[in-house]
Length: 363
Image (cartoon, rainbow, N blue to C red):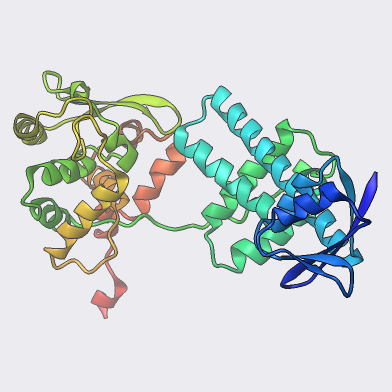
């Protein structure tokens, strides 16, 4: 096979070859080409995609011989392309595995994105070459260096551990993958007066109904947005929460006052599929929009705390506990798998703490 010498600089690609009419016609097809008679070479402007076109048009016709530097760059690019392709295949296989195991949509999204971030950080290293030391390096140089939370670090470790336990890699020693020390934070709780001011702030009936259900039933945001009209069982004073966290169904008590509010909303808006829909009929209300609803409500109150939607759930649980509800029932209502999760509300309840007399009063 005939050979073509390829010399590349910042602006031009120079092609040198023995006279060949077919080769000349190929070169002349490139815009801006010209013949440099003094050096007996053809010159083509070096633009994005030009090199790929040269390789494509001379494929099977000639052997392209690059300068040493360019050859190294090409090999590096090919290696990166191969690694990137393998990464995409691995992520697709991992996602398929999670789907087959019926992981939730949010968990699949979180795990795949976390694993992709880990792989991309070591994009010049093959996936099968990564080991537990790389994960420690990633934690230090990426997660901790950017101030990301222990929760995110946990998600990455969970994803990596699950991936390498199912898709074999002898270098990744699973037993060496340790999670960060658990942070012991208390839930943020609002007073009943603060909750009332938030729930009464919206003028819009839909907005008031959404915030009221979040607090009045201790719902997670995703649970609220996943409700359908028939989940309101007004004849039994119950709300049916389907396939929430952990793929669990549960029922939550629904007060008469809340039923009246939801009924008024339903008559006014007549949702078709979801209990709370967006601007288009049948379209689920977005997570971003419900956050904005809370933000607008807060702007009409005197509350200066950085309240989130989950604070309403924490407040509901704490207020139940303070009103004398048994902890076991609160666990069932909130959908907690472990009683230890529910017990954290005992640390923020005012019921018993307020009974403690300060020795300061005896001075």
